[in-house]
Length: 389
Image (tube, rainbow, N blue to C red; front, side):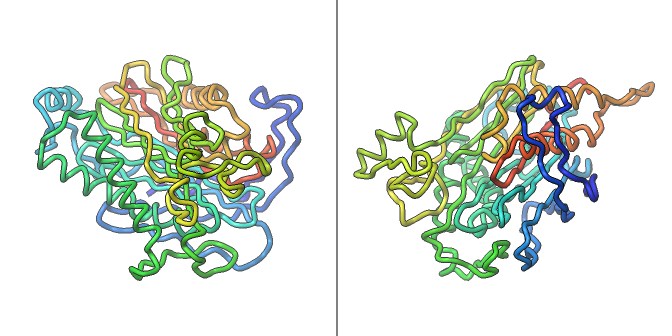
């Protein structure tokens, strides 16, 4: 299990750094409350620690490095390949291990922490789950997604593996859509099922579920493909051969196709501090928010991307990052951190990048967002995709 790598850190101004524009306003020094993120087996749930009841603004920083290598299966060990081609590709990458990663999640300038992050190495054989959930209204739906989303995806994947009816791409698309639909149902009805998540909001108690929701961006990293499923305005970006490649598209109410869908359903997009569904929600898709259905729906957009030798890193982040940092700048920051922390290989030793590199990259992106006056919670996941280190 990874330990938090920074203690007593302060969000310093980056105006003297080449990574920040000259016009950036220095962020104020803020106390950081350190907490530990725990990685559990896929059959267990991750409970979030209860937030302090103090009304003082609080900042949380947590980083996770690479999971225990023993928890990851070899790629060639999948007993239920979907088709012979996929099985052959898996065998070619039999030495693939859990990817190295780093996580940072901070409250920032918000009063409450409503973001949640989920990292589940080897949640199904040879595939690893990464998720960022940005809650709104309260943290309950985001926390529920953190606890349950990987389990639902695993269950739907196992159903498809047993049936073996669809090609790989169609299989993952169906798996993700079914998982998000089930997650949405659980989020809306969690009070009736007795599954009350740990509350991290200022109220310290569950709110009415119809007024609470969360975005969700989920990435499943396998030996040959990266599957990204997105619902809301969190984002996934791939760095490939020095180029930023977006793997998701933000669901904003003023996006032409989303605007048409909302209006066709009888809804309206009202500009109130930006475009909002019925003047309320600044995103057009989310899990939960039953009072805004059918205008706000939980159906994700799914992309399946083949991995290539030029793949460098994958970045998942909440809108607290992407509102103030471009895709290109984020990828450049991460590439610089990974390159500057490459290890020295010993003779006969399999090279592996330092876990600290990914954690440093995630932390630096968070500091950059805060220095650029991000007003939201900021959560960042960095995954090292390089095969030759």
